[in-house]
Length: 134
Image 1 (cartoon, helix red, strand yellow):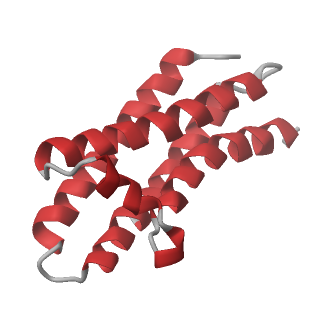
Image 2: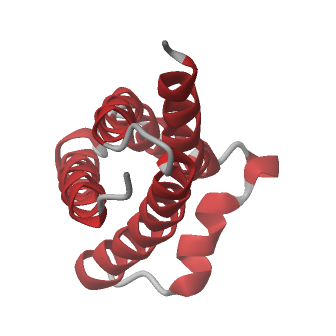
Image 3: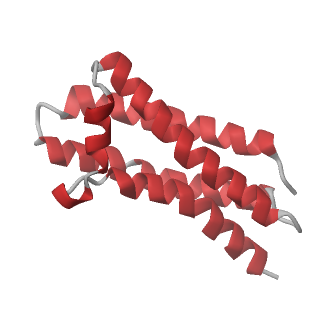
C-alpha cells in the first residue's frame, strides 16, 4: 500500500538527522579533522539511520503496491535530501552551487554520492526484501 504520509514523515526524520549531523560536522568536528574526513563523517553517520528508516518504510508499505511506494521513497528521499543539504550550505556557509556540486566529485574522493545512492537504493532494497518474505 502506498502511504505518502509515512514516506514524508520518515523523510523528515532523515532530513533532520542529516542537517543536525552537518551542523555538528561543520562546528565541532571541522577544526579537529581534515576537510575530507569531515565529509566522510557527514556521509557515514547517517547511513545506518537511512537503512533503518527504509526498513520501517518497507514494513509500513507491504502489499501489492510495495514497488510504487519504494520508488516514491527512493526519489523523494534522495532528491529532496540533496536539495535540503544544499539549502543548509547556502544559508549557513554561504556556499554557491559550484561548491555544493564539488561534493559529487568522486574522482577526488568525495563521499557524498554514497549518501545519495543509499537514500535512493535503501527503500527499493528494503521493499524488495520485505516482499520476498513469506
